[in-house]
Image 1 (cartoon, one colour):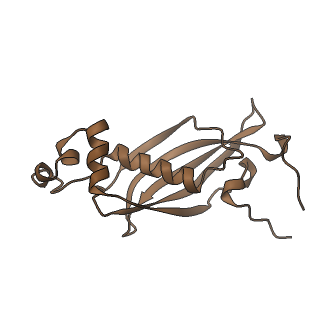
Image 2 (cartoon, one colour; image 1 turned 135 degrees about the vertical axis):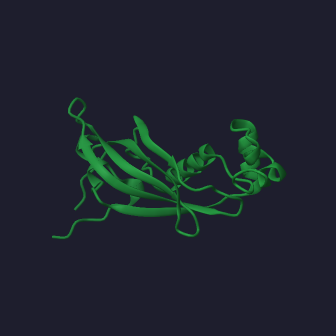
Length: 164
């Protein structure tokens, strides 16, 4: 008997398999967005001023790491987080900004399932540990972090009907 493949947006805790890797999304980064985000949240000159950025150690304008994280979150919301079972996140660890993100880059997200553990105190849910990465158009990882996500368990959801 072959295991059923469950679409990402319909998954429950039981559907996450350690070692599974998926890539998704395509997000174009613009100079306007880099500057606008930075002026609001990270006003350093190499994020806000293209001319000043040329004289920085980056040699040009770069996006804030926090903006990259926000883009990854948007990609996860659009392509990965199931609306039927997602219960939020207890946090992230090991945040790394590995390479600068520049105007014209195109980002996608990669998720690698590292661990999955059912809650002992609340057996209607489980926590999945995911290596979350932002990857640019050249296949380079520009950001990574380990996120923990909580998902409902299928057999504890009274609205779920078992299908053959």
